Amino acid sequence: QMQLVESGGGLVQPGGSLRLSCVASGFTMDSYSIHWFRQAPGKEREGVSCISLRDGTTYYADSVKGRFHISSDNAKNTVDLKMNSLKPGETGVYYCAADAYGVPVMTDDTTWYDYWGQGTQVTVSS
Image (cartoon, rainbow, N blue to C red; front, side):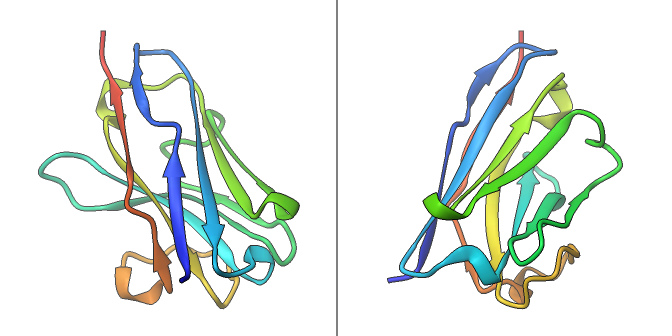
Protein backbone atom coordinates (compact mmCIF):
# COMPACT_ATOMS: atom_id res chain seq x y z
CA GLN A 1 0.00 0.00 0.00
CA MET A 2 1.43 3.35 -1.07
CA GLN A 3 1.20 6.03 1.54
CA LEU A 4 2.79 9.13 3.00
CA VAL A 5 3.00 9.79 6.72
CA GLU A 6 3.80 13.19 8.21
CA SER A 7 5.20 13.76 11.67
CA GLY A 8 6.86 16.50 13.70
CA GLY A 9 3.97 18.86 14.26
CA GLY A 10 3.19 20.37 17.61
CA LEU A 11 2.85 23.56 19.62
CA VAL A 12 5.58 26.17 19.23
CA GLN A 13 5.90 29.77 20.31
CA PRO A 14 6.09 32.57 17.75
CA GLY A 15 9.63 32.78 16.46
CA GLY A 16 10.24 29.11 17.21
CA SER A 17 11.16 26.23 14.93
CA LEU A 18 9.80 22.85 13.98
CA ARG A 19 10.98 20.09 11.67
CA LEU A 20 8.31 18.17 9.81
CA SER A 21 9.01 14.83 8.18
CA CYS A 22 7.21 13.05 5.36
CA VAL A 23 7.99 9.35 5.04
CA ALA A 24 6.89 7.27 2.06
CA SER A 25 6.03 3.60 2.16
CA GLY A 26 5.05 1.27 -0.63
CA PHE A 27 6.91 3.29 -3.25
CA THR A 28 10.30 4.89 -3.76
CA MET A 29 10.39 8.68 -3.74
CA ASP A 30 13.44 9.12 -5.94
CA SER A 31 11.50 9.79 -9.15
CA TYR A 32 8.85 11.96 -7.50
CA SER A 33 8.54 15.52 -6.33
CA ILE A 34 7.32 15.96 -2.77
CA HIS A 35 5.21 18.95 -1.89
CA TRP A 36 4.25 20.52 1.42
CA PHE A 37 0.93 22.27 1.83
CA ARG A 38 -0.76 23.83 4.82
CA GLN A 39 -4.36 24.60 5.62
CA ALA A 40 -5.36 27.09 8.26
CA PRO A 41 -8.82 26.87 9.84
CA GLY A 42 -11.42 28.24 7.45
CA LYS A 43 -8.91 28.83 4.67
CA GLU A 44 -7.92 27.17 1.43
CA ARG A 45 -5.02 24.76 1.32
CA GLU A 46 -1.88 26.59 0.16
CA GLY A 47 1.42 25.38 -1.20
CA VAL A 48 4.47 25.99 0.96
CA SER A 49 7.45 24.25 -0.59
CA CYS A 50 8.45 21.32 -2.77
CA ILE A 51 11.48 19.39 -3.91
CA SER A 52 12.16 17.23 -6.92
CA LEU A 53 13.93 14.07 -5.88
CA ARG A 54 15.06 13.64 -9.48
CA ASP A 55 17.52 16.55 -9.31
CA GLY A 56 17.08 18.28 -5.95
CA THR A 57 15.43 21.39 -7.38
CA THR A 58 13.40 23.21 -4.75
CA TYR A 59 10.60 25.76 -4.63
CA TYR A 60 9.42 27.99 -1.79
CA ALA A 61 6.36 30.19 -1.52
CA ASP A 62 7.33 33.86 -1.11
CA SER A 63 5.86 33.90 2.38
CA VAL A 64 8.36 31.30 3.66
CA LYS A 65 11.52 32.09 1.67
CA GLY A 66 14.52 32.49 3.91
CA ARG A 67 12.77 30.83 6.87
CA PHE A 68 11.84 27.34 5.67
CA HIS A 69 14.20 24.73 4.26
CA ILE A 70 13.18 21.55 2.46
CA SER A 71 15.52 18.58 2.19
CA SER A 72 15.41 14.94 1.19
CA ASP A 73 17.06 11.73 2.26
CA ASN A 74 16.53 9.30 -0.57
CA ALA A 75 18.00 6.41 1.38
CA LYS A 76 15.37 6.90 4.08
CA ASN A 77 12.60 7.74 1.62
CA THR A 78 11.99 10.91 3.60
CA VAL A 79 11.52 14.62 2.93
CA ASP A 80 11.89 17.10 5.78
CA LEU A 81 10.63 20.65 6.10
CA LYS A 82 12.56 22.75 8.62
CA MET A 83 10.49 25.75 9.64
CA ASN A 84 12.13 28.68 11.43
CA SER A 85 10.80 31.98 12.77
CA LEU A 86 7.27 30.64 12.79
CA LYS A 87 4.37 33.09 12.93
CA PRO A 88 0.93 32.68 14.52
CA GLY A 89 -0.69 32.92 11.08
CA GLU A 90 1.15 29.76 10.08
CA THR A 91 -0.95 27.64 12.37
CA GLY A 92 -2.71 24.85 10.52
CA VAL A 93 -2.52 21.29 9.31
CA TYR A 94 0.54 20.57 7.21
CA TYR A 95 0.30 17.94 4.51
CA CYS A 96 2.79 16.35 2.17
CA ALA A 97 1.90 15.12 -1.29
CA ALA A 98 3.73 13.20 -4.00
CA ASP A 99 3.77 13.99 -7.71
CA ALA A 100 4.92 11.18 -9.99
CA TYR A 101 6.04 13.63 -12.70
CA GLY A 102 8.77 14.77 -10.34
CA VAL A 103 8.37 18.43 -11.26
CA PRO A 104 9.06 21.01 -8.51
CA VAL A 105 6.10 23.19 -9.45
CA MET A 106 3.15 23.57 -7.12
CA THR A 107 -0.43 23.59 -8.25
CA ASP A 108 -3.58 24.30 -6.26
CA ASP A 109 -5.28 21.41 -8.02
CA THR A 110 -5.14 18.81 -5.27
CA THR A 111 -6.23 16.07 -7.69
CA TRP A 112 -2.90 16.50 -9.53
CA TYR A 113 -1.01 14.68 -6.80
CA ASP A 114 -0.73 10.94 -6.63
CA TYR A 115 -0.54 10.48 -2.86
CA TRP A 116 -1.35 12.57 0.19
CA GLY A 117 -0.49 12.18 3.82
CA GLN A 118 -3.02 12.54 6.61
CA GLY A 119 -1.50 15.80 7.87
CA THR A 120 0.20 16.96 11.03
CA GLN A 121 -1.02 19.85 13.18
CA VAL A 122 1.22 22.86 13.71
CA THR A 123 0.13 25.44 16.25
CA VAL A 124 2.08 28.66 16.63
CA SER A 125 0.97 30.38 19.80
CA SER A 126 2.30 31.94 22.97
